[in-house]
Image (cartoon, rainbow, N blue to C red; front, side, top):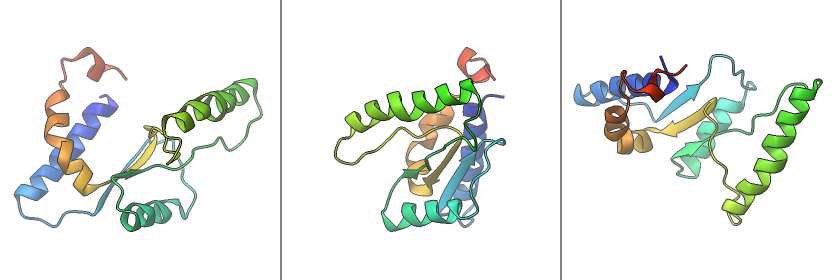
Length: 131
């Protein structure tokens, strides 16, 4: 299954909880299986999400080591070239696009777009079937 189909499945579970009158979480954490956060990262992300009233937060992901040419290039590309573009996109707030590997969303933000998102994910879609 694609990441998008997995998100749609998770969102449909939330929708079922909402319709069933069960308590809703305050936030939803989406994390790839190969992503390992620092011990305090999830708590810090939740604190930022709640205290600042944000819809989503994502940490700055950096490789643990930069000891191969591929990791050097990936780091330069991600934080050098893309970093300049991201800073230019929001020169006041220094916002950056959320990476798909590790992000926390407020339940309110998820609920506001989940119906459309779940309709958009279709198993027969070429994009949704890509792994």
